[in-house]
Length: 187
Image 1 (cartoon, rainbow, N blue to C red):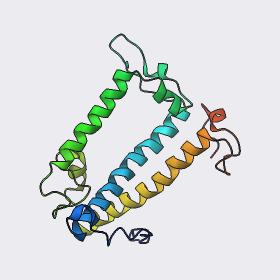
Image 2 (image 1 turned 90 degrees about the horizontal axis):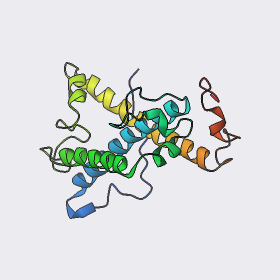
Image 3 (image 1 turned 45 degrees about the horizontal axis):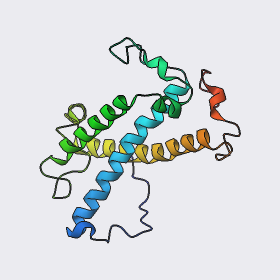
Image 4 (image 1 turned 30 degrees about the horizontal axis):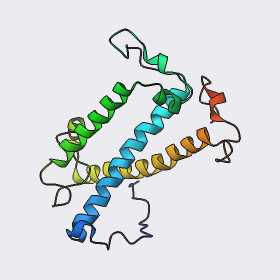
């Protein structure tokens, strides 16, 4: 069975809009890059939300003084983020910024003929994963990544809504925090 990108939907007609006055092809490259990037972040966030709700943490030390990752809390990922020190938050944001700079330095740039989502400088393991695959297999893997990213974006927003506004997601009739530590509940 061949993976296909879920249908084309452009209600704001962004594909026709010449964003940044660089031409339609560059604008489409920018939008595809943004979709892939947001999808990857959403996939990581979705898995992280599930892992935190299950009470799983890294066993290593969080700080040089011996504070453990478990001290941030489990069962409520948004509260765990609030418990990170300001220095910790800035180091996370700084690392993400470094990844952004490295990705934007890639030649050829995704807005000037390069392929969106490749990042040879940043995603070293991704290129190793794709090496040895046929072009059709690579296309199938990229299509699956886009589809999974789209679904993860919907999923993480559902989890965030359900964990911050009780009753906002009909499937989760109750607050999700009650399921912390249970085995895959409420699924």
